[in-house]
Image 1: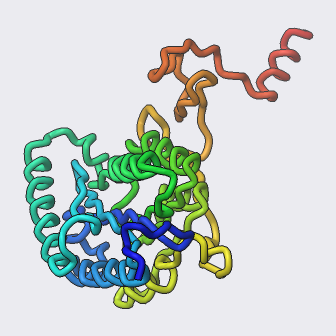
Image 2: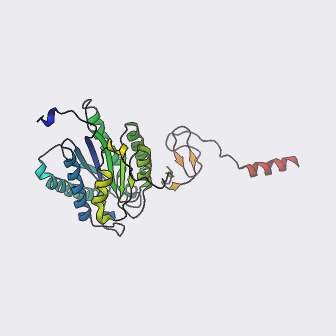
Image 3: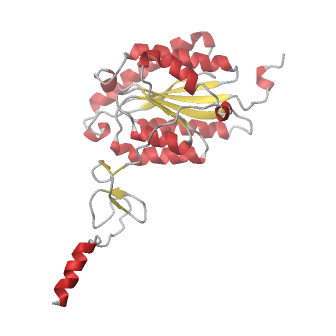
Length: 293
C-alpha cells in the first residue's frame, strides 16, 4: 500500500474550516433551540464523519466568541484518539478567555448593541489559514468554510464581513452556512450566495447531525452531481456606516462606496466632500412654475 504522505491529492480531498458560534448570550437565551452540549456532540460526530470519508481530509475548527475568535482544533496535529478531548479542552479555555474579555470591555460597540458574535474575525482567520495552504505547494486539498451561526447579525461588522466574502469569492472558496438561530441571517445568505456555497436553516435541530452529513459533508467535486438545497430568497440589504442600521435605500460615496442612511457633507470613511442632494422632480417643477410668474 502506498504511504499516505506520498499520495497525490485528488479532487475529493477536502479542507473543511468549521466556524462554531460560542456566544454565551445566544446559548443562554430563548433563541437557542437546543443546548450547547447537544449541539457540540452532533458537531463532533459530523467532524469525525468528514475525517472517515477520506484519510487525507483535514478539519480545522474556529471558535467565534463575543470579542475574539481562535483556532481550537486542527486534525493534522496530534493523535486521533485524543481528538474529542483536545477540542473540548481548547473550547473551554477559549470560552473562559472570551468571557474575561467581555467583562473587561465596557464598549457597547463591541457587541453591536445586540450581543452579536465576532463573525468577521472568524472569516478572516479562516481565509488566512486557507491562503497559507494555497502557498504551501501546487497540491493541496480543496478548502471550503462551514459557518454554524446562531447569533444575530452585527451591523457594525458589515464592511469587514463583505470584504471577507469577496476575498473568499476571489479565491474560489465556498462559504456554507448552517443557521441554528430562530431567524435567518442576511450576512450568511449573502456569503453563501456570492461564494456559491449552501445556505440552510434546519427545521429540526434535534436531527442536526443528519442535516450536516447529508448536505454539508459533500466534497466540492461531488456537489456538481447533486441537487443541494437552494435558498428561497436572499436579503441583500446593506448596513449604513453612520448608524449601523440595515437600510433599503441610502447614499453611497462614489470614491470608497461607503453607505449612509442620510446625506452628509463629507464622507466619514475617505473624507470626500459631497455635493448637495438632488431635489425631487416635483419640487423642481414647482420652482419652475414659480419663476414663470
